Figure 1 (cartoon, rainbow, N blue to C red):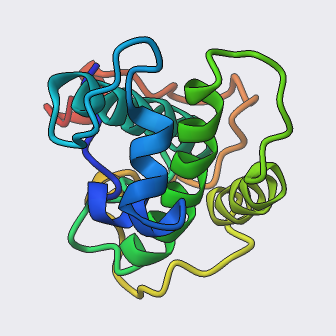
Figure 2 (figure 1 turned 180 degrees about the vertical axis):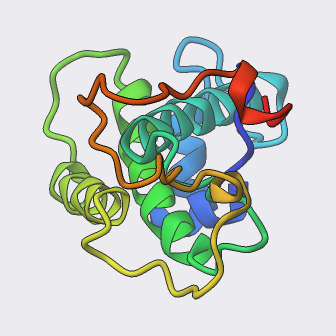
Length: 163
């Protein structure tokens, strides 16, 4: 599944301390290109973006779409996503070899921020419902408890074509 880009290459460069630092992380260690625009570096950056997006979306689940224009918290999500991206840039540059990742603590804080937003503990800065929340309201079954078997049960047929 293709995820929407949550941050740009320029934001990732800022997050890791500049373009030169990103080049150090991204460039082919066995055959350096010394060019962030090289196919190898761009593939690395795309992989970092996918890893960060996968992590961010797994935290947010279906609570809201961070690129939904009705959610003004996109900047909040983006800033936390780019921190997670910096973590993945470092992690992937080492080839999985255990080295201390300087972004580990920042990643934990960013993940905690996103988890709080997903749980509704942090405000998303909107009075509007995100578009995927529209039409997702609770149906009143006439005041009858859901466990009640008395009376007329609700069925699709009895909804009068609402389904």
